[in-house]
Image 1 (cartoon, one colour):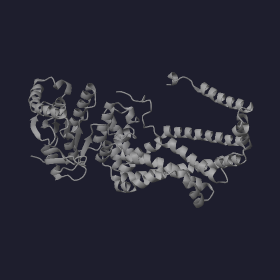
Image 2: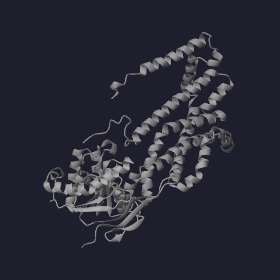
Image 3: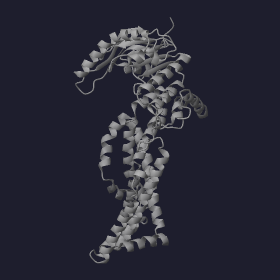
Image 4: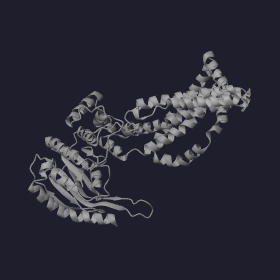
Length: 262
Length: 268
């Protein structure tokens, strides 16, 4: 299957090395001031120190726990509310302007309120992440429920499905597939919520490390934090891919090669 | 005479118009139609004549605006529990594999999963898909999906089969093959069938009786023809017999005017 695809990874690697090399050359030759731009070798050294010295792990653990909690709670809440409003035309008509308003509000401004309500521990970050994740999942599920194929619904009813069985066997699986299509975005958003929350006020986490480093003008450490966060984000994305492939086997693959004929 | 399996008594169905200025649309008006027990009845008519509306009323998915629907002599309210419905488009649950799809109706009735699976497997074998149980609908061809849908309907042993142009999306060979299979399965226990199609040849080849519907809006029954061809039939071969051709000529005479009318309406 991959035969037609040219092998790109050597080029990807070359591009990365090129950018880092250029960065290194410009800062070490003094064209760019190292004070403001840092230096790749020192950034990588810092990352290595963190990983080998173990200094990063407690902070990373906090950030990841916040991310996963925000993701899980936000998804569950979005799924339940989306299903409920999708199935209740009256309630959804009533709630619609407020949902639109809540969605268009820049929700990062809620961070100070959450800090007051939930303190500087992990829960204020989780709350911020939940508000970000919730709307993505909610809108997808809401749309999914309203766009369930009417023929499939009619078929299930003819096969004797009760209202509850329709929800369990038709609406929920249909909505779940919509949740999965938004999974990449919502995991990313949970991560954003955690890091931004930490950055705005915390005592632990990678966002906190970055904030500390920034305060001390240690630009290399800031870059090191960014690098670690990027690595984590890529890892989470790969995990989502894996989960998606395991749980959505019933969906046609994207290249559509799985169809057979009789 | 015995009580008909399905009886539509002067049913009319109107839909509210879309938009503010739109007139209500009358799909069918004053249709009287009955399917006797064990009878294979086909309804033919030009496109847009409200054939599917009739079927949906028989299924209880749609309430008639006037008139009544009777099932085995009793007025129908809500979903018709004695009927199975084979839809024109794909109606399988895409997240269930073939076997689970066939077992869906049993699951809804609370049959134990192991028992439901075993029964579903037997039905898959009966429609020639014994080894495709693990495949999901998107991994099956159009013809195979139709067979799964047929098994999904028949596993509940409905007394009345409602079919809405079920084979119209299939290529000609697959279609004739499916029609023969349907006849073979039907021959085994002769359920009442209400079969909707726009294909007159298909209607004659399959049915005991063909009803012609007028062009919409406000479609009515304009003709009724007994098909006295011998059974068992082979749908490909029976088309070549002289009796078939006579019947075809006779019914087409009634249908042609309606098709022309529908065509002109579509042009306008």
